[in-house]
Image (cartoon, rainbow, N blue to C red; front, side, top):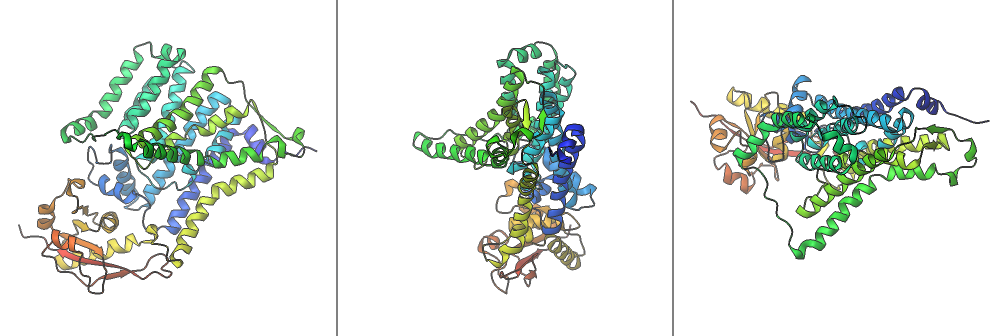
Length: 503
């Protein structure tokens, strides 16, 4: 008797419901994990909040939109980092929804669910999804851009030009790689007959005007601040090293697809006992243009991003791994054929769950086990909220004024900057160009707190901090407990108050 699981029946009869089950499962998982295990935000989230607080038109790290949205989400949630985590998951769900709509238009609703299930196993989307920043925000914008590009060229829907222009403009305000991605899109349109037919009208001109209007403030900021980075090509002697870097970056992208490869192998006909009894997921045939569209955008961003990073010595794929691998799940489904047989359903379901849950288990192990191994400090275990409250209250009690600025150790300054109730400015005193909203004169006149990692019980400031703040008087270091201390000593932070000057 043929066995067909409830999940297969849902894929066949209710593909949209199945999509929401998968998307909300992933989003809920990465909302719960950081709230339980993180006492400070991961990655560069604190940096994004420090820049977002100032609402600059541009930053040394690229366009400003992601930083603005991080601050808005933080404020709307009552100055809680939960709002930023929620924003990250909203980006993930929006990206998956755009991929689902695109896949449904190309391979049908049933196989579109398979696309989402495979995409969920790609490492960059499943681990971890809470480091909000330009690369995270670029993922839904790129997926929406591809969706509307397909509607324009593949379905001849001229009304999609307006949506595409909005997304292109927002992408330019989000990622430094936006120009490269838009050039790849334009190259595809020019290289294909249906693409050339789609742009042979006035619609692209109106779309270009919308893009320019959206991106104009950032472009003006770039010109005024002379912030276009000076990129130099490598010397001939460095080409071998850059070639190895390209292989490492592109190989890392390929390795991120290990989950798709594993599920494909386990679902192969050779490993099935009774292949004739496996239920099939059907799709209408995909024409040549559809295949070209999928394979081009599955390969071109990954190759171009890895090549750009290798040429200029970047340590990450230009544009982000999420953008580079967005179409990988759909490409795998196209390769699988018009009929996808689901063999060994219970086993495949278990393996899929293990792949999706493994990153959360890794984070749990990192948070609870690493402190006992003395292998290094877990950055997300530092108690940011306790630090912010203590230093804000101490400054308020000593000066009768709210804490306005914090400087010193960048890691601690960033954490105090978002966690203190008054949201003080962060001053990068070692590199003042990174914080154009405040300088040494304004910091010394307005007052603030200087912090550093204490090396002794007296809280002696490091030599470089003493050189930049020669008049500070160190206070008794403050000790904080991490989420799990393990074998590590208490986190001791030295600090000093720079009192505000009378007007």
